[in-house]
Length: 332
Image (cartoon, rainbow, N blue to C red):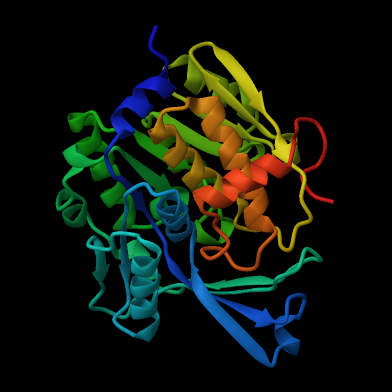
């Protein structure tokens, strides 16, 4: 029997991955550990879950493109330029013509209750439409990654639904990164309905235990297992508890790597991007998730998000000097 992960890996081989959703500008007070209100110096980087995932894939040497929209201003142009410099194909990053604005995030680099404030009034990335989806050559893609925030508003929601339809016709696997952000949704009930419906349609749902609990209305583990029984490859993340791979009636557990964290965010983006790029290279899903766990550990030990995403060589060096811990916490 061919497992879902093997089918996805076969389709990924030699084909680019498309990530769908938000990319924005991140701003960090300096030096590390400084509170926003005390800052006299700031540094910037490209961020946003989809942008970070795309950068992570690019840093593994796998071709990747982003489907998103940015505002016609300096922030939007910064994001597009920065993504291109990281190696992300931005031909499907459209420029909005209305009052939408590219997201802006202010994030403190500390593990001591960091303040992370995201400004997303009339977010530009939610302006993608079904017409933008239809402009994509889906048949040429190895996989599509949709992040949950892209489903939170129209017309982006309809654009994602159209992509899933096109992917089904082309036999292209779709990954859903649940990526639940309460502030993005009108209500938890709306998020539950939309995200659960999409999780049932895709070939690879990915989320943590809290996210699966949310979309299942409780009993997230059983919900995830049911998706796997229906033929999906499910990555069920548990933070410090590692990640369970559910597929084909079986499961495998992958642990974590112990590091001293510099900040608590960005690990999921590093994990998913690295896992997908590694899966495309053919070592199998357990090896791919193991490298994803290493990338997550490296990512939280560095400032920023996109710039914190490690290269393949950095992951190799890290794994040579760090042993996986399958039971204990990932951070000191």
